[in-house]
Image 1 (cartoon, rainbow, N blue to C red):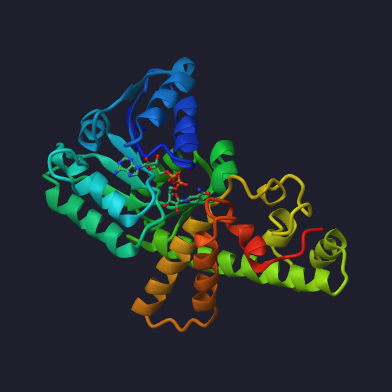
Image 2 (cartoon, rainbow, N blue to C red):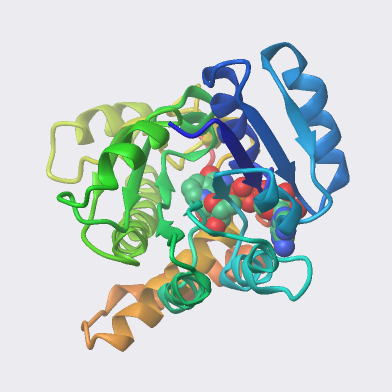
Length: 314
Ligand code: NAD
């Protein structure tokens, strides 16, 4: 494995993922970090003192200069492009020969492919490599290193064992999905499914309760009915049904409703590009957009659509 690492983007997901990386790497390995938010950098250095070297870089370029493997975890395609392509301070302003870049952000496939092509074009006789590797499992999965990670690489690629070893420091299931951008294809298709299951469960739970059902009893029953899902059993949108889930804690934390809106929008755009007929996604996007704009819901976990629907509070 490489001995010099870099991490760009220490937000809700990047911070705990980078924390897992630092804890599990040998102490003598180095980690250079960068985020536009200086507070996140300071707090990361404080929190990781005992686990080994962590140095704050002044730019993505500086991270790249001090690392052989760089992870990126920022919100959207425009941020990933800024990290890699900004003149003078971006990754590509550094010498990238032989380096490995792993982008875990959930972004549009076109931005990811464009960055991958720019990396390939800038490579010298010692090529650099760029892979999309978006994740599923939320902030809890990031904290516990139990993420599912979908990688834009062929299982037969000679690089896959290295990627598998590196990503296993942060995830428990690492899936090679094919070629470039196919990790994103899997992530966006997953979030298309999961956003609509959450909305359908929120509507169905509200319907059942308005008809007189007890939320907990109905949810328990659903687990062995055809309407069962991870959303019902582990992240039920109705407060109190899953006591340990963020849905029972005022929807604080978790996967922000604005991110769900972003991912559903990206999935719908991707569907249009390949002529995949979709019906439910458009209505779903309207609901997640309205919930994102609603001050009672904004910045809360996406399952807050239940509150937006006017769902019965048990
Ligand atoms: P976040 O907004 O909490 O964190 C993003 C971080 O990137 C911030 O610290 C921000 O300052 C930093 N950043 C933005 N632009 C930057 C730049 N140009 N250079 C350096 N740093 C920059 O977002 P998050 O929740 O950590 O999500 C990151 C990505 O992971 C998103 O694409 C999201 O869809 C995806 N994701 C999130 C979750 C979740 O539960 N939060 C789960 C799976 C996937």
